[in-house]
Amino acid sequence: MSNILVIQSSILGPYSQSTKLLDNFAVEWKQKHPADNIVVRDLAGEPLPVLDGEIIAALGGNGELNERQKAAAELSLALIEEVKTADYVAIAVPMYNFGIPVQLKTWIDLICRAGITFSYTETGPQGLLTDKKVLIVTTTGGTHRNTATDLALAHAQTVLSFVGLKDITVAYAEALAMGPEAQERGLTDATNAIQAFIAAH
Image (cartoon, rainbow, N blue to C red; front, side):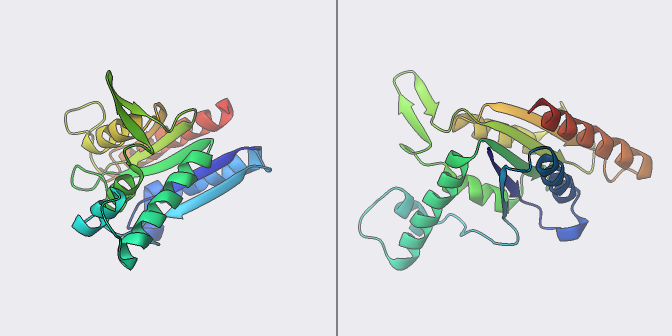
């Protein structure tokens, strides 16, 4: 039995293509692996506390913590534990104004912990969240794949690799706002990549 962590990050609810694609992924995975455990964290439905001076001090373990800081530190460890116990992690990465959603950035800020999810060594940083396979489902309104403006995907891949999540497969749905035919092609491309990921595992 495997543990699958699904991270939804879109703010668009039922109108979100990345959400639909990841929902379909979860359904198809469960059909193939009915005994597996799937945990879904909806970052828009259950917002996380945005990083500020008070919270970053708590994550750094600086001084006596107030109640808000204690809650943030405990939540951070809970989020990290979700990743640690997962064998597979599927993450929605829709592009918003060339970047990732603030909800996803907040999740990243809470799981990037020196000494817990990464460490600095004499040869450079070393990620500590290893031996997991990651599926990134990224959606864009325009065409950005393999260009200098593909910043949301680059951000996600960089930070995930930094904490040790380097075995990454990308399901890319682009041109979703460029007309019905382009949208259909984009969604088909992403669906095919998701199904190939499921078939391979």
